[in-house]
Length: 330
Image 1 (cartoon, one colour):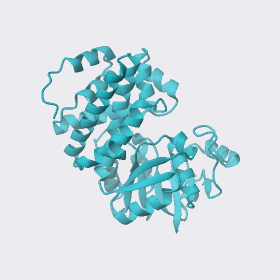
Image 2 (cartoon, helix red, strand yellow):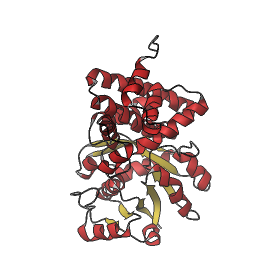
Image 3 (cartoon, rainbow, N blue to C red):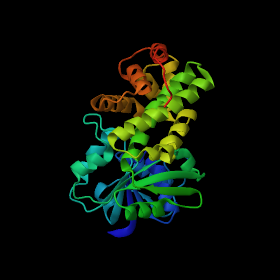
C-alpha cells in the first residue's frame, strides 16, 4: 500500500475524468469498471472512447479490469458509481483498510440515507471519508478546462490530501467540513435541473427559469438544514454553483431529461436517448419521500416528482405551482 496511489471505482464519464485529473496532478491512479471489455479497450486506446472520447490518459493512469489488482497498493479509493450501486460497491470493500471518498450524488432510495450514512453503516471501521461535488462537467475536466469543486471530509487532513491529489493549474479543489450540505446539494440540484429543463422545454422563458433556480436554491437549503447541513454551504460551489450549472447548460443529463419530457417523451424514452444514468429521476423520489418524513414542504421538487414518478402532465404540474398562495419572500 502506498500513500500516493488512488483507485477509482466507476469508469463512466465522471469517474474517468476524475482519474485523469488526479493522474495529471502526479498521483498514481488505477481505474476500474464493471465492464471488463470496456476497461480492456481503454487500456489499448489510452482513453475512454465510450464515455469520454478524446481525453487521453496520462502515463500515471492505468485502466484495470481485475478487482483485486485494482485495489492492490491503494491507500485511497474514490467511488464514482450511480447512487443505486453505491452500497453494493461498499459491501465489496469490507475488510480492507482504506480511506474512501465518493463522487456519487443522491440519497439511497430505500432508506433515505445520504452516502456518508451508508458508509458509516457498511464500513464502520472507516474513519477517513469524504465527498466531492461542485459545478463540473466531465467533458470539460477531460479537456483540462478551468474547474473548481468542493471536498468535504470527516477530518480536515483527509480533505487537504484529496485536494492535493486533484489540484492543478486548471483545477481548484476547495475544502469543507459540511459533508451533509455538500451531499444534499449534489442530490437536490439534479432534481431541480430536470425542472429547469421542463420549464425551458415548455417555452416558459428566462424569467421562469431564474425564478425556478432561485426558489429551488431555497428548497435545497431548507431540506439541507432539516437534514443537519450548514446553511452557508448552499451559497457555495456545491450548492448554488452546481445548481446554476446543471440547470442552464445542455451538457447536463438532468436538464436534457426535462427537455425531453417537455417534448412529449416518456422517462424511459428520454433515458434511452441520453444513454447514461439520469440521477435526478430516482433522486426526485428519494428527496420527496425524505422531505415527507421530515415534514418539509418542497413545492418545486414535489411537482418534479409528480411528473417523473406519478406521470403527471408537466403543464398540470406548472399549474399546481402557480396556484400556490404567496406571501413574504423570506
